[in-house]
Image (cartoon, rainbow, N blue to C red; front, side):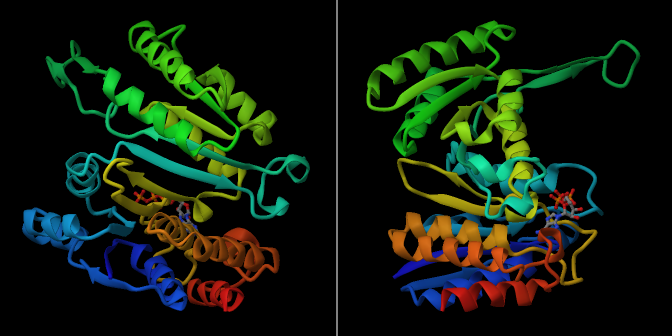
Length: 342
Ligand code: ATP
């Protein structure tokens, strides 16, 4: 029996997680669900902390975590989100951010000619270093002479392991994206790790693009990509660009993963979307597809594929929420996916 931790979180998080769990239930897998529904903005506002050391122990004892969304308009500082998301990422060393991008139906893409080549790629973002490592500071803060520094951290170990992972999941080719022509120090390190990893994986085609060119290429010919591997900040931006090309944030799935321990925090890419919370408008597809990633990594490949096929069939039949051109509520869109699954 595998124990799965579930953190429904805030805003539309509980709504989409409900649909994800009902869909998981249909599969009849041998899993036990440990729900931590006190980890949310309300708890943070009341107690000043959302996730305790005890919660983290429970999470560590589970095989995986499924997370809805973390965020609340009443909180202006990033401390709450850092205390949950970044704490999980750093304490569990979830160094891979894994973002599959699939165009489920041509009508979902803003691109004129999306039907031709399709879109089915994977963006692997380094998740523990880079510009988001929190290294830096301010001098003469809040004056007209303020100096602000955010350092971009790249280590041989961190860069090598994420590139190695990208090769391990590639079907045909890996494209490494950096800006080594303008960011020379980290760029040189990425290039050195890249050359080493290319030599270690002779069966997979390898290419390199600067991030500005990669952004243009993703729009011009997204079908040309298999796996993109890049640093934390470029990955953040390119993966959202790719998600939008494939139908928007409501369909995008992700996992924050440690490839050695196999532990993953699975979450839809969207946030808490307070503007639509409680109205039945939230698209559950991102949460269902994140659950499919989890099911696959727990060893149930056939069930995960069945979930993905069910999502594709429901979207094709317009049995989906308004953001994808349907007219169903969150619950009914979840039920439509389950109907295809059964
Ligand atoms: P947060 O601060 O938690 O990141 P946010 O509203 O700033 O929340 P998102 O939650 O990513 O950021 O939402 C951006 C917009 O996309 C929302 O205003 C909402 O209209 C839309 N959106 C996000 N998720 C979904 C979804 N699952 N279904 C439909 N629309 C969504």
